[in-house]
Image 1 (cartoon, rainbow, N blue to C red):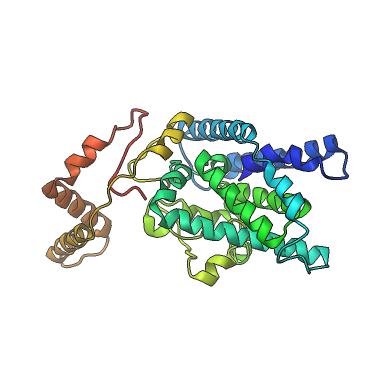
Image 2 (image 1 turned 45 degrees about the vertical axis):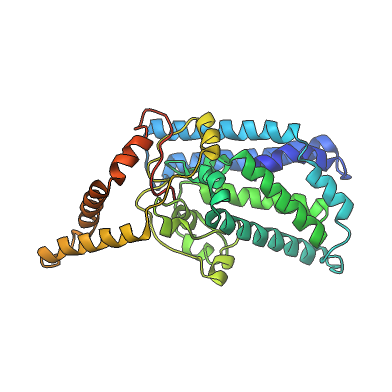
Length: 338
């Protein structure tokens, strides 16, 4: 979303009455200042500490992905989204709204709701997930993770926005305002920070604590909190989850260079474990706990040992080892890609 916005902003501003140079530079400066402030905040008060090498690799890969995407989007003239808003922004479902403040608020809500639905679809449609999982493959989470988006997902998201612009009649001014706010909020909720008012602010907006759950390594946790700006969509549709994830990223996926993230999106999905296998693991874990008289504190250990035993017996472990590539920098595959 961020690199879409930055790559298209120059063309969109040509239709405005503002001085082009000042507007373009001013908006870029706002995004840059917020990015730098969030980086400094993370450096001084990171809520999840990661090794310096891991954080450095994350920033390098994510920013390189952003620059590559920006180049591709510019070559493909994706800025036509703003021209589309100029052409069809005076008609549509919001045409009858006269109050500019109300119209701007509705445009933001409409775009955020569309992105919520799109985000949900990216998690529940395998074909979309194969590209969206690139965003989730970061082994840590920081403000630069907002840039970690596969080019195919960006193009499809632009198409979704184009349809939303035409149907609701969102003009270029409203689109620019909404994209600016969404971009800043997306950077904010990816930041590796924690603050006291987070639970209060999280009643309306997606805050870092909520979005960390979305980046959890556990699928039951990362299939939640889909909102880009507002958390009330998740509350309304029952997808809100509050927790502190044990680990971030995807199972079996290690650190990646920017080129490996691109290839990862084009790679086939690994097969998922059959539901029957989950049942077998649960039963084996229960048997282990029963032998100890259900002594508390061993639940995680029981599950891990049961999973290892079942996978070994079923041959899946051998398959996983063949499919993976260790932590040598090459892509790793896993039986549970989400």
